Image (cartoon, rainbow, N blue to C red; front, side, top):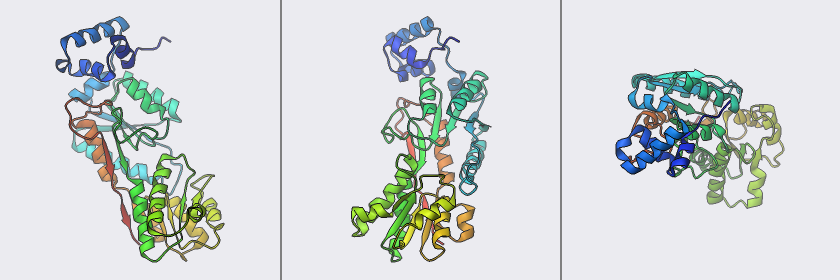
Length: 338
């Protein structure tokens, strides 16, 4: 099957940026006549046909936002996405938009879903979740000039300033700073961190909050902190694995802060209630066990996603000319103490 030309192909043929091509397609009046004509010639010669999604988002003809419904892999923390979807659907409804859910087994299958939904004129824009280093879904949507926002940073790029991305995320580093500071204030000194191996953008961000707080507020050496930095190499949703890992620390830590409530459960299985344990996500399990936990402000996340999608930016990767507005929203979590 012959590959359909993309915005990047048009930009290369015309010798302009992708944003200029997008402007010619969506707001041609702001582009110089000479440049506009050059882009239009490239569009004609390549037989480029833009997806209808960008026009629909601007004119609000379909008013539909698509989000992937992930399979539940963790019965403890798996409710987080459900809560986000509920908040997003509720707020989208108030703004006159609908949320369409789709499924996909993996990234290539999800990209194939993008094409089907766009070709069928079913959606205006996408919200991506579970972002990670080298996320090919982001590359595809940028390449095809499709409006989108990610819940989660586009890890691996200069995400705070990169003009290619619109994103909303929860400040995990701040969350673990709160958690670590809380147990230190209660008299703990040897505070362990229970998380995932290095390379997980989300996990690394949370680990950094613990590490920086420990370095600033304790006299523990780098070697001592390394001993207290625990990474679950196997299935992080298996509490028994986390419990075995915590049990290897001798002497036992004074407190443990965790990258998720699943891992906090593992720490509780290992140590009982002998030391303070703080989780992350504030799930029903944390509430049932009386564990303190970092709560993600999902209502604020949903508000930020919609603001970037239907506000001044209109979900346009590459930025919108003349819009003096940050292209990301970093939401501060809060610590729920029990």
